[in-house]
Amino acid sequence: MIQDDSTELLRGPIFHTPSPQELVYIADGGLLIRRGRIAACGPFTDVQHGHPNAATTDLRGGFLLPGFIDTHTHFPQVRIIGGMGQPLLHWLEQRALPEETRMSDTRYAAQVAQEFVHSLASHGTTTALVFGAHFALATAELFEAAAHVGLRIVCGQVFSDRHLRPELHQTAQNSYRDASELIRRFHGQRRLLYAVTPRFALSTSEAVLEMCQTLMREHPGVRFQTHINENEVEIAAVAKAFPWAEDYLAVYERYGLGGPGAVMAHNVHTTDSQLERMAGAGTSVAHCPSSNASLGSGVFPMARHLRAGVRFALGTDVGAGTGFGVMKESLQAYLMQRATPGGTVLSAAQLLYLATKAGAEALALENETGDFTPGKSADIAYMKAPEGSPLAAVLQRATAPEEVLAAMFALADAECIQEIRVAGDVVYRGTRHCAE
Image (cartoon, rainbow, N blue to C red):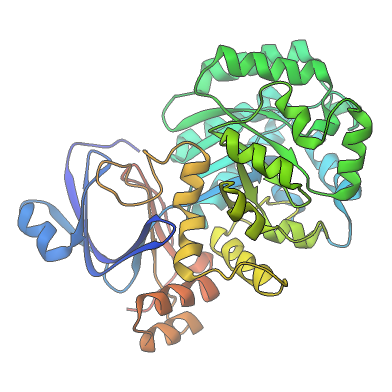
């Protein structure tokens, strides 16, 4: 879809969170879009008065939120969602990796890429940090699919050279060659960015980790992603594989893999020392509550991350999780923390922050997206309760902004996603009948 230079004024209730403790709610809001960016955000009458010639789109009856940001998801795992009863390493061997080997078939990968991108958009996700495939051609298919639809995607080919199925292994030399070509083709093109992506320390040799360091040095601006401290058996295996390392994080630190724009998924079984070092480096964590529960990995120590000052946002994890819904992931984060002694009590405003602005900060995109501050990209999720739904019933009596937002996190799902915009472009429209 091609933007023009026209100005459009969206009218409807607005929610956004410029900071963790700041909930902005405008009951009759105006969101002015010019050349794909937020030009103004405020009460409708004020914005309209300042821009009387802007074409107005009336979206009252629904809600305008920033597009959701998923900071950890796996493209090759769309078709294996729902596996139960297995811990991480068994789940990988018996469920995830057999499917990931199928990505060697580029035609198959192209089909899955279409499904993956559609699933992101239809759940309100406008930006996602994605583990690509172990195969360069399959990863390219995902980049192409995302570019065609118009989503903002940060992705990379997955590197592994040991402890996985041999079909998924690649030498450091070949990984470097393939990644360099993917960076050349896609990084910084349209709404695409590249992320250097070793799967996890257990499946990568020192040669591959050194190669990752080289890529990061040669291409300033690329992001970094991996896994850390997800499962106690995994952590023990990493310690055995790298006997020189103080802990799991030290493996990555040796090769300078961390810092702003770096996201490490899970971090369930962490230490105070690791938290202190992550905070000092500016490394972020992708919190994946559904996946942590499904695989029996444990409960994310949110309070300890907050005390240490470690930045974190939400990830769906897809295959090991329960789907593509960042709002559902937010609800799961709330529930798991509430059910855990010493857990963090999250407000609806904090859930919105975790689902939007926190993800932008984790990806070093806070100046580009995540809220409706003028100058940022017009990345928007327009949500509306389906007619006759429990959410529609609750919203009839809800009055306070926190009450409305809490109901949305408790009850909203993909049926509520009516329109998604990225940089002002409509990239998805729902077709379900909704309540007026």
